[in-house]
Length: 258
View 1 (tube, one colour):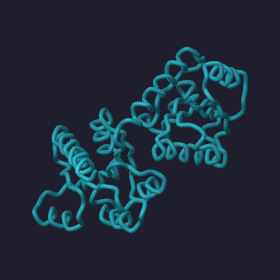
View 2 (cartoon, one colour):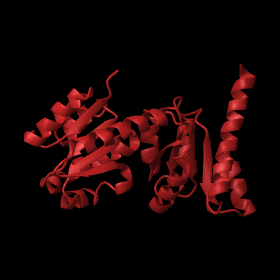
View 3 (tube, helix red, strand yellow):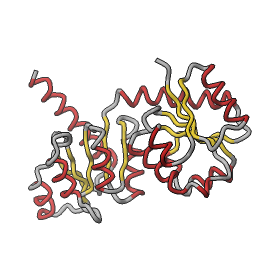
């Protein structure tokens, strides 16, 4: 089956048409859309790889850019962008660099685009074979650090609020949720309660992340009957080992239930 690519561009000039033609020649199934809320929403399931052709119109599409960023995070889209240095920097004010799969400068080297796309396809194939972890925390710096620790072995999706996490789980079923205990607006315990009240998310394992290691706090966490808890003060090796041990236990449970 041909890999699907969604090309996002305001209008279709010579360069965009050349991209579309060359991608089709390479065997990709290509759809094109305008960078508007309506069009992005309409085509959001058309592909896992997006190619965004930037222009001097970025300041005019603030809301669509936020929507595009959320799509990439919540639905695990790979976003390649093509544009000048100034356009790239403008885009990164709304869509952080870690969300992007790559940036290609104009004038575009088509072979470089093919190489980047091949890398995205390979990464998608590898990610499909990995366990999927949803990481929920309101601290962006901590999120990026832990994501970096985990993504070599797992597919990692990050959300910065409880409602983002609930929205993601409405259409996805992660193999594990690593959930911050203390967050503004919607706390970790409230998220767990919402998950357990819904049939779709009731069986998703949850391990709490907490910055408090005193006995009272730990007992309060355990009273919610999560699948475990990790202290934020733990080192990288300890966190990775704890998650690996969790999945090993899950694998053993599956074998024993056969």
